Length: 356
Image (tube, rainbow, N blue to C red; front, side):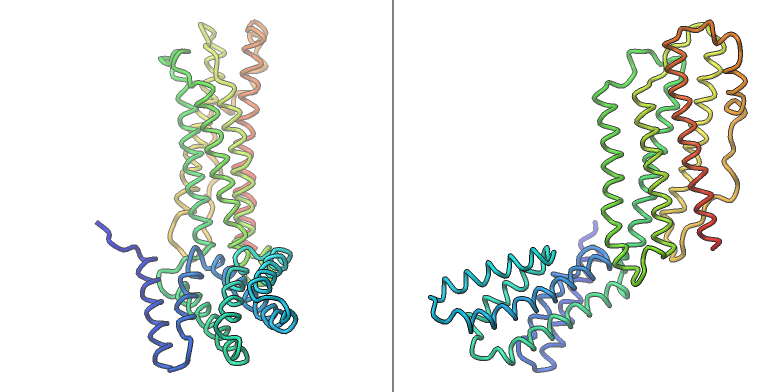
């Protein structure tokens, strides 16, 4: 049984260390640094950079409004003046795009107005200094103690999504089992649920990209890690679309038509091959390595049955099959081809990216 996670141990250790340092220095209000650590030390390194930036901007904004409020609203009752100042802080903070920074600014504004109005010239610089110290200590700890980097987490999440798409392709390939009856096909609700799950995982991966950009420093969109994530994201988007389309166009019973059974077998073999390829992607993307993951070296081993699909479609016996069945098979073949192209294109761009 695990009593503490590495993140919790890091938070407790750093908070205690920062608090002890403040006591050793003998400077007043050192507890602001210890309060800053748990407010910033969450999520990834890139996310903490954004939280620290907003906390500093909010504190500076709160200081300016505090000075203006104390000087400009002297003739107004204190509760009303304080409420107006806090409302103005929220208004300006929202206009500047602060999502959490205005909270730090609001606390500074209220405490400064109520407790430190006679010593603002010394209290505000000291408060800002301890806040900056707590942010810097948090960022250093994220690099040194059990690092939480947005790059690593984004790649891990991309690998997890590859594994989920792989599982869906394997399940889709199993629909061609002759023993599977029409009654055992998934319901429309189950099909919709799987599609929504994949879309949700894809969107969760995309929500991690802003933290990755902040972490990569100057000109982050030219960084290989970001460009790789965009390549993988484009492939995942196309693969998810193929999976959802294949879910909606379930294979129809072939009856005694040998040609249709061969077409279905070609689809089955290709889906199995693509699923195996995504398994390699998942293993590569989730590997714990500081370097960027490597793409598969060899091209996708396409099954012989899939390579013969074009010849099968030119067979005169196709004209003997019902039109509805042919339309369903054609739709599925297009979706299978889309999934194949998505993986092949991504691997070419992946290799080109790592080769400069």
